[in-house]
Length: 170
Image (cartoon, rainbow, N blue to C red; front, side, top):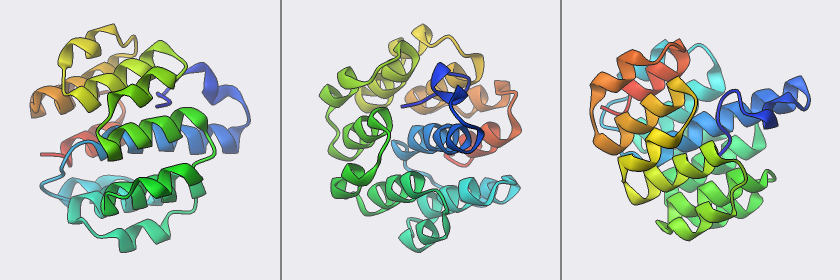
């Protein structure tokens, strides 16, 4: 999974935005979202639609996502269908998607970047110990919120978009 502020985000602005979006979205796909009410505070329409798709378990929201990789990740998550993962062009995101939809952590080991790999392992195995190896503060808190299922970690996230997405899982 690509994580915010990782070196992979410095390619092109449009590609970086899509990869950053996909990173955040995939980190949410492992959690069953109980409520979509927090999704409405997300300004970016692709992120909001992904959040609503997971929160409402309705794949119809996925078709409104403009970024193709994010759309495929959304469809994979809402339909619990790993075949959509194979259409994701970014290799790390594809492996993260496969790990999440197949519940197989072995895919995480093919992910380059320690933070991305640890986020994948933590969420796939539901083991918070991997979160402590993630260097980014916001991503570490997102990881801890998901693996420990504790909303309080979401409030420590400085990015409003990521915080809203995190809170939507509770």
